[in-house]
Image (cartoon, rainbow, N blue to C red; front, side, top):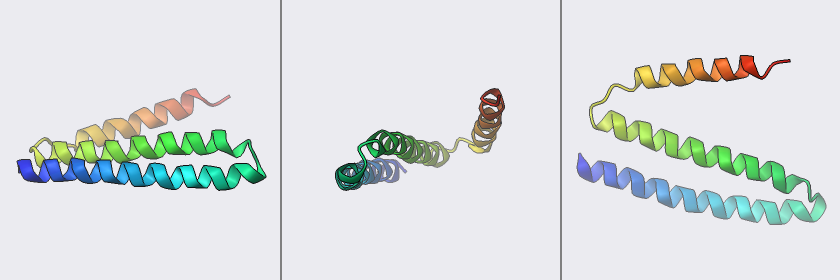
Length: 88
């Protein structure tokens, strides 16, 4: 079990580095045509990083025997609350 958790986090770190390289190359290509794209790509980069590590964290908790269904349900309800709060 411990080996699998370590392996998952190592894969997450590798994925993070590959994602960073891909996003940086995309920023270099796109900012030549439109400099305003860099800020939106930065937001996408942050979202992708948070998604990656959230999924790995949930996989780790699941592997440790913790039920993650309530955590996922809570995240869903929290997302709905934020969406409703941001409406005009």
